[in-house]
Image (tube, rainbow, N blue to C red; front, side):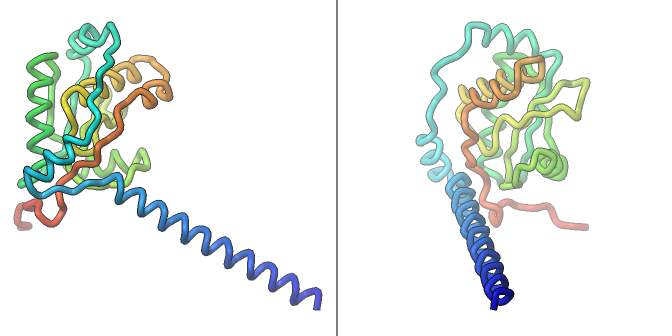
Length: 195
């Protein structure tokens, strides 16, 4: 009797743990869906961007840091044909380049996925924007998942630069603008034919 009671208790604990992990995975999936906003039309893109809070506060060394560190860093972003959020973020990165003199390069989807995996970030789609030192391709920091507003991108690039030059990562990450998650609707992104 004692043995069957222990087995029953163990079974109930296992069942409870299983339902708890099931609830956790459902909650995790719901949170992921709430954070990702796939768009397929310009009106959807603009509607989501209008909901994004704009960064208002910039540190006193913001412009000097971005202009001064430009020769040492590069911005890399993933893209895909037909990706509306990609076109939007690339236009903003072009404005950033004109203002601060940074290099910007395309990052292949495979490299973007590998980087995301190394940081245990789920791949949610294009675009993803990263900052890294030109001389060290293994030290990368994501600054955007999805498109964003230019002031938010600029602040996140500034903070990534600070983290890569010695500011404690925990301080920089807390100060970053949240990633918008405004990405391309996967089924509408045109993929080149496989040959």
